Length: 308
Image (tube, rainbow, N blue to C red):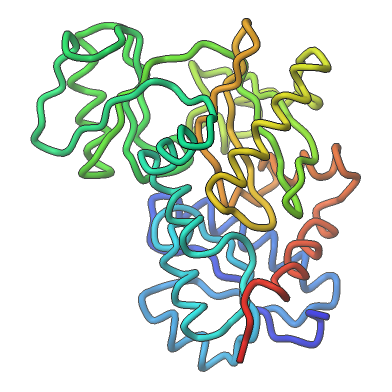
């Protein structure tokens, strides 16, 4: 159906994850062109509306990451222009990007997340006032790819962690540190297709580990007992649905030795690079090579909105 449409691959953008988005977009654009789609690559700026009109874009494949692309902004613009697009809608995208509101949505659905406190710029963070002790995690409320995230093991590390988090947002989360296996669940067509385990060489699955070859070991399927593996898939799908996500996503979990599955976040526009996890899960769990995955995602955009 989509091969008769002009597709704009939206990539780059204005967020801290721009460089990763450039790689995702290039991979997606190449996969579409190779399969005979009429696709053009569009580096997203503040003139996006004008560019979409000038290029005559009929469908958008969103390969953006982070703010102004993954947070509902671009999705809202595309709906105003009545251009079908890939992935989740405005509200789900905004909720997933905002770690505080997504946690509240998870809690309302009975989904386990780490205990937390939220702070705004200018407010004092006093360890004695927290309902949990060290170690803890400090992170910006609205960033992805572990940008601005720190693990605080000693009180002397707190000030630097707060400074880093506040560099990226006016609002931050302080979470209880949960020790567990880092497991990512891939969702495609609103169904779980597999769970992969990440064993980073760094202390946690940070920006370097995510995007540097050799900095993390990927184990598929995740090393979990069969019952716990199925539980992880169930929790991943529940988190996807709790936010109202559509089509595809990647859900990040911490699975503890006692069998608890803590949801970290839902990525509504997961990476599509050579090192990205959703393509790996789709290939190993659903038998979908990268090009087939891209085709499946773009074809799903046919029903993303109703055009009058």
